[in-house]
Length: 400
Image (cartoon, rainbow, N blue to C red):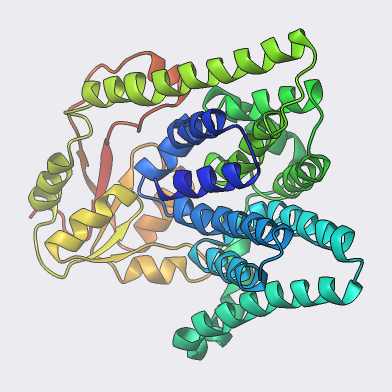
């Protein structure tokens, strides 16, 4: 809701038609890709809230400047929000070209009104000053960890980024169209009704940057503000839809987005969730944890993330290897644990050998009752996968 509200404020500050702004904010809130993100308890939506809020403040500053009122405090606040967004989730950097495009529009308008380079420098300094001040304030509590951060950042990035293949990045981008129809329709709008050149340029830069990294759904949501902005640019006041064909195409595209977003997010997704009541029941995992390992400070290697909350509740000491891409210390880690819980299908022959060398032997399979889910789940990737089954490895020959 916070992100959608910030988006609505930004659209209205762009002088987008009020009714269209409300509709676009609703589309953004109910976009299936975005819904899957915040329903998964990720914090990307908060990063977007702060970044879009920064764009809103830049537009607000421009309105105050055009009215002859003080505006640099708003520019400074925009810098604060944008810098803070990075500390919420770094992937928000994908949205920074949008902020730069908005700031460029402010500076261009300022120069057209005042013909003063000095004023432009002051505005840039206000934005940068706000960002630097926020960065300094946020670093104070963790300053003693800065050296560790810089030492760890390269191995973390290396471990989290698979081998780069441009074809796979493009394929992932097109696969997202099954979940989010906003992206392809915004591209259509950009071609049919060219308006907002700075926004189109920022979108191109963002897509190029995104394709140079690992493209996946939870990163693609940072393209949604660009897509919404491209559509909104066609409805900015004054609305200059002179050709009936263009008017029909834009309104039809908007109607399609509303219908599809509401259908997938408010009808199909809840129906899928209801069909997975038993196979996604968290109490089943807690029961498996109690029956297979029990309570207490057991050292458990957890490769199935859904057991994290189970382990916290039962008092386990849980481990997972994330940074050690070369697995130099992985065998030593396995030698220190009492149990290992892994998703069935994730244990290959090499991993089986590594577990055996560490003294961990297969104990039993942990099944979870499954229901027959709606076939549309497999077609659209909506909804989560059912739990289990899992494999339990132990140092003990018998179950507890």
